[in-house]
Length: 245
Image 1 (tube, one colour):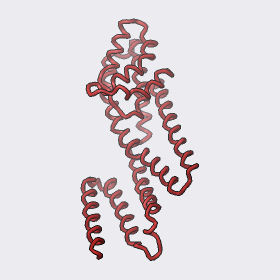
Image 2 (cartoon, rainbow, N blue to C red; image 1 turned 90 degrees about the vertical axis):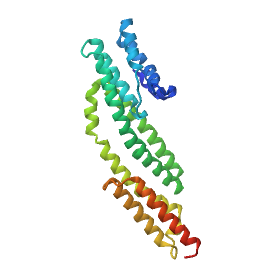
Image 3 (cartoon, one colour; image 1 turned 180 degrees about the horizontal axis):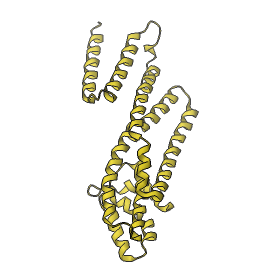
Image 4 (cartoon, rainbow, N blue to C red; image 1 turned 120 degrees about the vertical axis):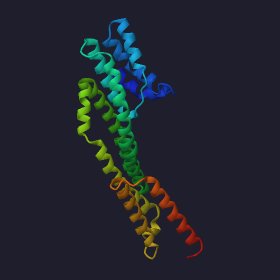
């Protein structure tokens, strides 16, 4: 199982346009399949199943590898029919891929980077290194825990994953990221808070970011309208300042 877990880090190394991450998944599952299927013919069938189309967020790869091995174990015991594996793969991989893009790529990783940037801007390099190491180790622990849970519990682990409520947590983290972005601007452009400086600019951009965050996450306004409004205001301010208004 350790070999399978370590190989999950290499699943994206052989990405292709036909099966996407399927070759890397087959390589990762190979040690487990050879242990589960002692019969050579059944092993070949399991290998063909592992080579079916597969693509998901890399942070979910260990979990899915564990679930797939758990299903293969049940197939070898005669508990489940082989077609169940492909049905589970088709439903879970794309669902977890969307969840991973929203929670990890769109919220958690951005939060980690914003905290790291703020620490560096303040000159706290030591704390920045500690934060970076903690984030890196946290991801590895998450992958290991989900891999073990997926292998032990199989599909039942997805029910536990649903209780984590990652979708709503992702929305909350994105709101926090909006506040962290304001703090970063406050540090990068100190003239916005200097006495006698253009304090209206700081108030304006603070209100703009908060309104955008509220409008997107609560009112479900399209991001395209925010981008258009931002560009319009920016061009207007730039034109006014260039003319000395």
